[in-house]
Image (cartoon, rainbow, N blue to C red):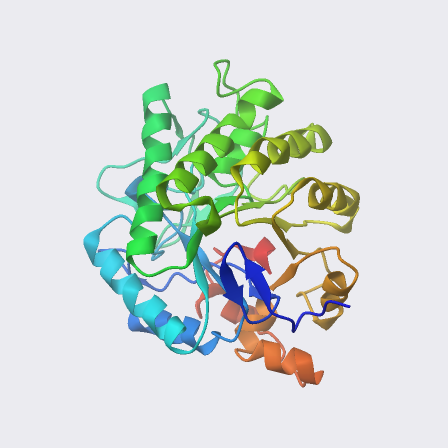
Length: 355
């Protein structure tokens, strides 16, 4: 029987175990340059016994930033700073992928600065607010991307992936979940386009597929993963055709030979779809399962019964940097403190469904 503590080959990268650290927004970058600080290197190095670390969301371009103090991968200064992080993780035997997250319409001009405005597939404002420093601000309608800008955005992902490899990352994860740009193209309430990038399921998956193709071509499919969250309503997302949409998407990316597919479940009600996607995708399958509260030790059974190849843990990794050892020993576990979910500052912006 396969267990969580067995090694696994991830498209040529050996992982010491099948316990992944889920991506969680930390907001610990230096403000002006969106550069990760030494604290970021310490934080990830402490958790290097994970089979795979997937970083917090990293904006591939300046306009892709969604929240204050999140890091980028689009400048030489950022690349150099991330090299300090990857070196620290590798020195302790860890493996680390950079999550490329373009926030799309989830942002604000006060966060972006430099005269930038959030962009999206359509000029549809999400409901709600975000912390824009200082204070909470209403979301605004994004500027609809032109077709030329869509292609430029896709190239932005590819260049950020090249930058990630230059910075020493073992690979990249495309964030196609939780209501950010890729997910906005997938969802029919955020994507109202009538051209080849909207409307039908085949058109709405086009952006995700083209980003995956571009990134795989830039750094290799063995260094490319994709994260999705079927039926997730986070960030004012509504999908009317989830059960049709995601099998078509997975069928479209399957020929690319990506290193992994990472599914995060918003509710237990999508497990049947999760199993169908697991069957349809022949690469490594990572699951961030739906749970009551933070993902805990019970989730290891999902590896033993074949539901997933790796299980991603979020909040429990924040409270227990040596989580794999504690899971193997059966505890004890430090209790996650909700205040730490926000990088130590409870301001209400974090990729909370990752937990």
